[in-house]
Length: 164
Image 1 (cartoon, helix red, strand yellow):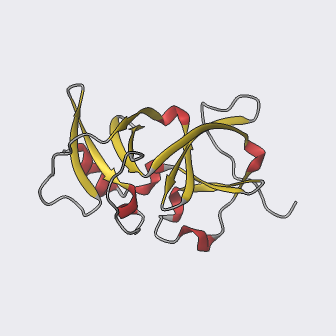
Image 2 (cartoon, helix red, strand yellow):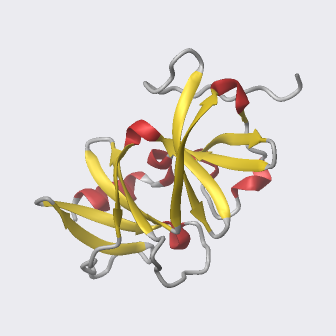
Image 3 (cartoon, helix red, strand yellow):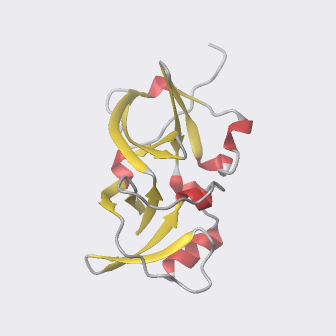
């Protein structure tokens, strides 16, 4: 086999299988480790934060905890659209903090073999930091980009979010 497979380090691997939450952004499908997702919620009112980066929509109060909300479309350099009935916030555990990520829609939880994960070609990254792409999953007529969202932000950005 010519392409080396990307090892995925996760507590979520059972016998070579991993579980992912798949979501859509601009008609493309992405996946993240199901164990990083704390909950998926509908769009609440978001409180704007002055002088925040363009991709930070603001913060929400989630059961007494202030959670920064990131617009994935803006972070990936995609055209922002109006939120609709499918729009969701994926609240994820990012180290010791919670962060919310606005996505167009959440599809499903899928279970795949870790052998199905192939490395992403360098040109695939586009507006996405190449470091946060853990690989690409090719299933029949479906391509899914596997993301490691912790690697999407610089050290300074992480410090900014901790201060919100």
